[in-house]
Length: 272
Length: 349
Image 1 (cartoon, each protein chain N blue to C red):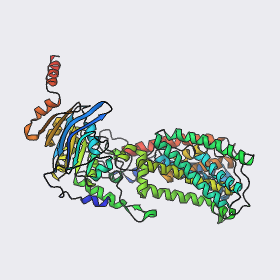
Image 2: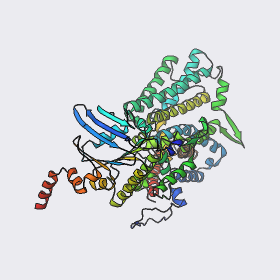
Image 3: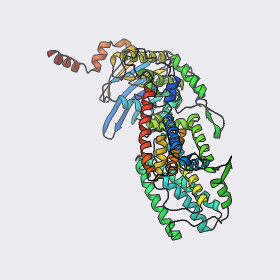
Image 4: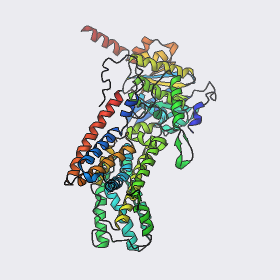
């Protein structure tokens, strides 16, 4: 199963239909409204940025699209068809892959084992079915090379890589295993400027190769560099929904920071 | 130890790291520290105790090692998978008692008892694993519970059925000869007596090593022990893997129990208490990380060998056997510190 996903064709989707679309989606935890009236879509080769401060509902949104939680109202469409995703595996089967903030890597395990974790390639019949160690190591090397990461030792524990490299390994893994839609949960949050650059460049490259990317971040600068659409969440509601051409970085930043609130803050801080 | 260049305060700004040297990679092997320790202990007793040098002594050491080592394989795999099994010691006795009492009470062929014991042992493993996964209670507590329960059951049921604290001798029952040949025979190689458990021990270590390094399940074992949530997120069946590991311990407990039964024909119902820690100690001395995700079956085998050598070496040296536990404690601390040091050093590169 794992082996044929590598060359998952991207042509099958007609360009008009978004890969993933949310219509009026809402989610409630008990009597707490986590999300309400969310409309969002991502098409082939597009980067949709979801911005929001802490507690805005970004995580809930990811969980819905990635199949960890189901939505309570509205519609979730994949390739134009309504779906209810009940597990991350189901989302993966639809080609929706999520790269979480914590990356879902096992720090003490070698890079190549992490790359294939959960989708290992094997050969032989059951009692002696073994891993194709050399093939997997080579494939991991090639895939990482493609995105400009040249690791001297793929047997090194992934925990010994830098944050940006780990992020890229996680993204490369998702792409290799047939992702059509990538959900990136704050991929640049814990990274330095240079490392963030590496990741952003890769996001852009992934979109250019035909993937749809949902990029969750609280950094408007990063979002503006790669985004085609911008959706701003605030306390579970959508407060902004626009295209790249309709907004400037300054506007985005000030919207993100709550507009007037930021000005007030600026005044306050300048006084000192 | 070698003077590897420990001075790299001004690391080059380039994030590319140099390829680790062969020595560094050797140093990062989890079982290295224990191997050095095993050699040191061997030399120590070789010098101190004359009788330690005989082939008879070697034969005994290997036998003691194998009885601990077989269980240590399962316990090490479980520990790599991030869990403990404190019931592993008494579970061996439970298995032996089940086979013995059942065969005797029903006057059947001993193989009926052997098969029922296998089912019971696997069920205990499954129950441990299932409870840990279902409740989320740490395995330390769950298996502490099953440890106490089994300990009580072993004694109570044996007394109930036999009126004494040991099971009846079953050596003249149907099927005993075959079972004895399989589980408790011995043979001679070049004047040295080898108990068959030594062969099984090496076999289980080899199988476990192959599973860990060359199969999908092995990958999963490291993953569920290293980071359970990450493993789950990429589709690793966490619960099945962990329950499987508990059942693996169950299987080996059955195997050890059968050896115990067919070696001595009768089983003391209070036996096995305290052995669970020796299995864990063997695994830890062998480089398994207590928190999971790191270690090898070969390391656990070396850990068991260290136990076997210490245990017998002290007797051969004519010292009071009370010192065994003391030495074991020292070994454990030394091994833990060495492992930590080696690992830190290896990950720094």
